Image (cartoon, rainbow, N blue to C red; front, side, top):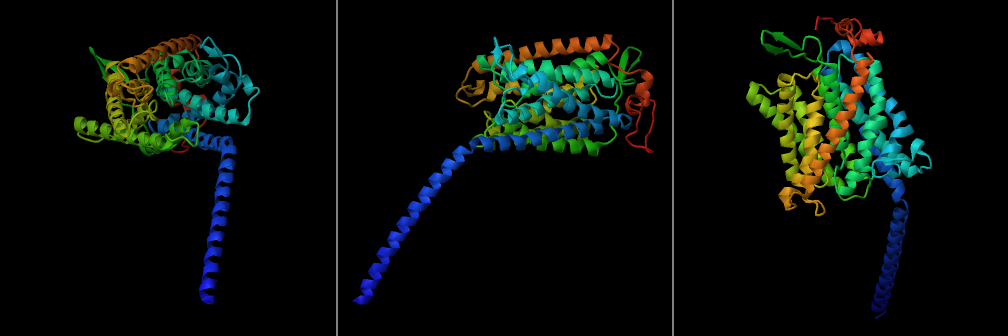
Length: 447
């Protein structure tokens, strides 16, 4: 009897203890949730910091890619251009670019405040850091399109203008609350704002500066196109892998919120599009030339990444593969068209990768978006979203081409654009910087 009474008391005591413990756990969870809620801003600042570092590392990727696809005698010049893109771009974007892009809007055309980041809190400072690496990306795209024949001083002037004026104005129209965004134009992470702007500026620069010596030779009534090969394919491939790595920060960071439910989707669509682009580029070159071309496959991966950037959060994984496949095919076709038909010398394919596929990425949102607020054509949205996206393409084309051509025209008239033929043959490392990137191994040719 006493044993049963003891057991009963033990059971009651145990139940009471468990109930008290459960209440303590519940209180702790509630308190923890409150603490996390209070720390949301700090967590988002850390999230942007992480993604900023990833995107900043893309500068190394651009450097390695352009280095590998160019000749060894210009390697130091390429390093300097990519370094100064960020250094000059950071200061100019701090002084005026950010204010034009994200300041209080004037009729939806440009911002008029936040110059020098005046009155900014830590949250906005972290946002500025994330945005400045995007501005540097738009600027450095042009470097590949005008590689191996551009005066360094002219390139520095160009970097100031694009990061301080050309890019921020488009950025304001689309990301800064400007008139295009009010119409419903959508560009999640920059297929249009960053890549199309950079690609079009590269096109303007390549046209105005002209081809490298020996690239196009007239023989009778025909123009013979000569391939000027890069000096280090492994470096180029390293550059692409670095760019792909940084692209996760580029796209995922554009959620601006660590708790966003779309981060996993963005990472998935980014991966699938890049993979599909590389595969289709490899297949096309394999079929056409009987050999799978490494450099074109690398550009195919970048093309898929550029194309999905505008709609990474609103396009389904399956459609992301379609976007990447079309992007990879476009880069192969456009490289051939620009080089062999239009005779525009673009050493690394910057116009095809960023310009053509930046345009395609913007249009793809109008076709494949599954977001209920902006359904694409193939998801029952009709031509509403597609029409706005096409309008945005026309606007970006008009603004960037007009301002970039004017800029390069002025540089050309001021004799600040192209080096002399002798300097080009000698190599820009020696003629522009007085150094050799591969001391003791430099190989000089008449090309």
